[in-house]
Amino acid sequence: MRVFLFDIDGTLLSANGVGASALSRALSEEFGVANPNTRVTFAGRTDRSLTIELLELNQVEPSIEHCGRLRQRYVSLIGGELTRQGGIVLPGVRQLLTAMSRRDNTSMAIMTGNFPETATRKLEHFDLRRWFSWISGGDLHIDRDDLARRTAEIVRRRYGTKVRELVVVGDTPADIRCGKAIGAKTIAVATGQYSLDTLGGENPTRLFSDFSQTDEILAAIFDAAG
Picture (tube, helix red, strand yellow):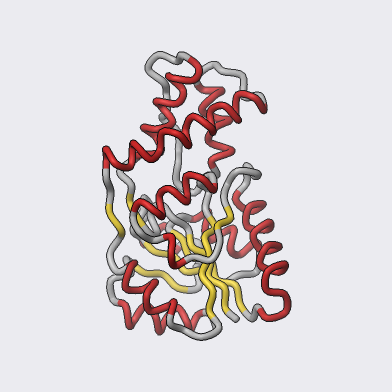
């Protein structure tokens, strides 16, 4: 069995910055922060690391309680922000997922820096949730490599010795690095914030500008997966 672990933002969809806007509102509504500062790097991060940094940046103690409150408020707001701001499914994604779902001995799951709740809302909003068996989110770890290690353990528990290959699919250097940290093949796509040159510098197993050429991409992905 091949198990493909997909990132969400910049890989499957573009949500027009709804995360930043929802977190800004959450800081304002939950902690009374006027004009919240959300000028931080989002791509490739886990939401746990982001909430800690954003609380510190806005002079709120990043305690367990405060992180939990920010998360809860953020989750409550993300659906409305998705409806208000919209977004798109990235080129070729639906066609690729449909084709992959028809392959034997193939499982697709999500490995994302998003909290599991916000990951689910994004996937459901864009009608992508149905293709993925389960979600591993960024609620427990600051470092994405640690997220990948926990996800690899989930794979081992779910599938045991049936797994022949792990493949991480993402749009950031962090996706490539965390895939390598668990011995996975890596598929990189330049539909997020990072260029082909930048992603290529991380030496992924395969690199694409987007997923629009379904047959070509499918053949390359399954060749890369062994």
